[in-house]
Length: 85
Image (cartoon, rainbow, N blue to C red; front, side):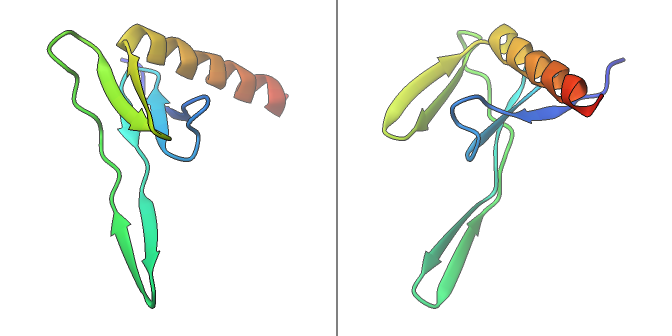
C-alpha cells in the first residue's frame, strides 16, 4: 500500500494540504489576540455525502473531489522530485 504524502493545496498553500490518497486537511493556525495567542490545530476534513470536500477560504466557497486532490498532490510530488535531481 502506498504511503500517504501531504502537499500544499495550490492557491491555498497557507491553509490547506492535499494528499496522494485524495484527502484534504487544514493546517495549524495561530491568532494573536493582544498579548495572547490562540492555536487551532489542523484536522483532516470530512467528506460530504455527495463525495466531495467543501472549504471556505478567503471569503470564497470551494468544492473538491478526491480525484482532483489526488491529481494535485501527484503533480506536486512530481515537481518536488524534478526539483531535487
